[in-house]
Image (tube, rainbow, N blue to C red; front, side, top):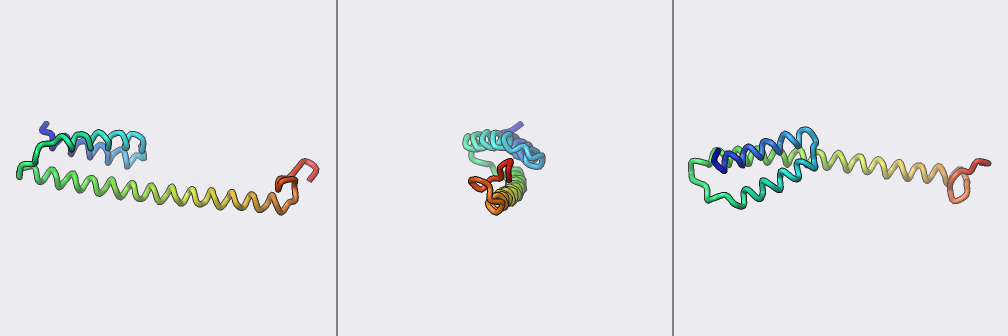
Length: 104
């Protein structure tokens, strides 16, 4: 396999990891692909279709990462709102330090 085909195969593997939500493995695979790409020779015109395919796959990975980040941000926001609500209920109940005690 030539190095440009290897680069495409690695990008496609990363896309598969992103689709499966295997974020830690994706980060490791991405770092390995960056190292490989840094060592590639100057591309010949014949590899242009491979490079275009890598760019297309990378765009798909980027979309999945963006969506996953937005989902995580929404979940964290919901947790924060829930935590605030719990504090509010505890304070309203008048327990010591805002917490209910067994007598309350």
